[in-house]
Length: 383
Image 1 (cartoon, rainbow, N blue to C red):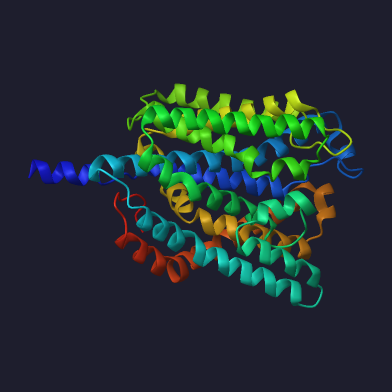
Image 2: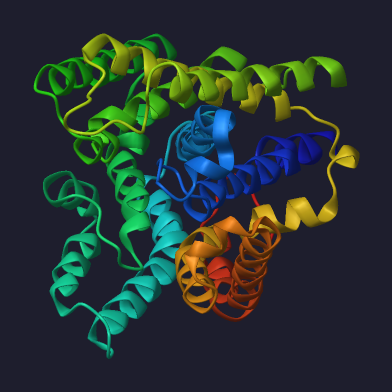
């Protein structure tokens, strides 16, 4: 019986607090898309002296993607290392089956809806080419070359980065020991900073930097390093210490945006190589501190609705741009002047996003998740 219980423990890893982190990452990205993130003639008079702080806070919210990348790398590494310890190896084929069943159905549904939207009256048929790039998970490099476009799928570039990470994640953990994994993380960090140094020297624009997969791999390195450092254990912090870590994490993101002019630079105001290197280092550090603030947190302190929204966070992320476009189309963006109405349309868009994701999860995602569960070696998120 003891052996059976021990086996079950070794083959299970689910932390409700990580669902809370997922929801936090989504919420930050949602806010960065909902609120104006660049100075404009209509918004500056309203904000007055608080304009720099406001824009820095909104742009800092974009670091929610950095948090998501760091969390993803941490969790994938943790699950694979536990699988290797429990079974003596890693079944790479099952890893890819699980990832495909988790991501591809909803992802390609979103691409199909995006392709349909550009063909409808008022759409931009030229944007149909974007779908092809995203379909082969090269959306990130398409945006590097052509810049962001106002369609319904451009935010899914982050899935392209994720899939590129999955190409090598199971292989490196299968064949590399811990010492070698530390070395690999060092290589990823050096590569990311070398790319940043080059992009700073050539005065690359925002899109060429932010959408670059090699740049974002620094966040994945941060997640793997955190996993290796914790060695499967959970940090034990008091509540006030966790709040302090959370505040320090946000401060890193805020300073990244406020002092280093990231990520609101343009082709003519690129802050330079060293500023970019420092900016992304702060973004990664903020993500690590935020994860540490949640890891090991007593689940009783986390509201159930937060855990639930974390479980459906993939759907929240996929549909939030469409919800924002729909609501903002009905209530014009100029209503930023009228703060109550502006906040109302933001809450309506968030509510619509939650509604669509909540319907999509049981009726569309769950059948695929049940199949995915059959291929699980280490149980993670319950359905």
